[in-house]
Image (cartoon, rainbow, N blue to C red; front, top):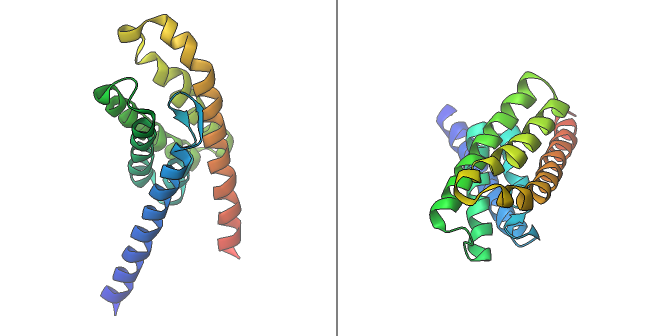
Length: 161
């Protein structure tokens, strides 16, 4: 009986994660600026709901979908680097939420996915790229992490009832 319960739980988890990946694909179509989009919201939510590792998978796939629909403007290798950096952001976002609270997590997610992630490409593209991308990326990062925290909090209160 225990194996059946575990199997059902695994199927349910896999289904929910697949749905979040599909939502990332839809969010990839809602572009804010260049490859900055609402693809990461489901990934940040997944990192809170399932944990940092699953959130990292969802968010990195979400960025790949965004880059794909944008034509990989920075090249495939750079978008893979961005996907990995977003995975790290989702993991630390989840960690900050668990250790502190949603406010700290939103700040951590915004700062890591905004200015810090943009700094990675300064050696390759220069400060002009940083100045061009930091504001739209930081605004979009805030929107994604904030909405993920709000949705997670709303769903958490409904589940506890």
